[in-house]
Amino acid sequence: MNATVDEAFWHGKWQRNETGFHELQPNPLLLRHFPALGLPPGACVFVPLCGKSLDIHWLLEQGYRVVGIELSQIAVDQLFAELELTPRISEVGGLRCLEAGNIRIFVGNIFDLTRTALGPVDAVYDRASLIALPEPVRTAYAPHVIAITDAAPELLICLEYDQSFRPGPPFSVNEAEVRQYYGGPFHLTCVRRHDIPGGLKGTCPATEVVWILEPAAKTRTQDIQP
Image (cartoon, rainbow, N blue to C red; front, side):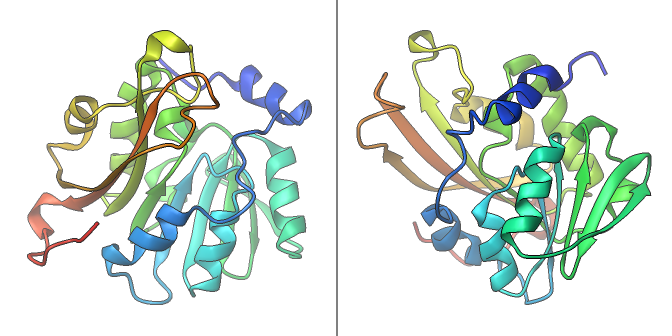
């Protein structure tokens, strides 16, 4: 793998508690659009680069099983503490794995996670993973996630803005790039575009874009409303 996650950068963020990317409530776009995937209770949702996201709390509350991967042990420890769960710890596929109830989190680099270790999943939720990675890493990340999840349906949330205003992360990922990564194995539906009030951290105008990715061979026929 020529491109990989900048581990030192993200470890430093968590060690210094520089976690402005961590939202203090479940993402409203998750609540509004995740039901479009049509998953039954008990379905398994993969959350890559999951941090200690409160989105995981919401997914568990809806009766889903959650499997994630996160580079930072600090984030994973905080996640289980905030869920008030004491995890069982094991090693799976060479990665540390923490599990309790309906949640299982791997600790490590996502490129080290294999399809065998991950196991079957029914959907992927990517709110802040693709956009957390620079372009050379995104080109490796997208096909890797598709491969290890067997092209599971996905709710993908991206940002679009003038990258010249700030270096990222989060990075701007426009429609052309989304279609480049996912247009082969998936039917892509843009279900929402909206301008972020105040722009991206006050630095520049930005648009949040929500995509539903359905396996091309299994595309549902009903319309998806924004």
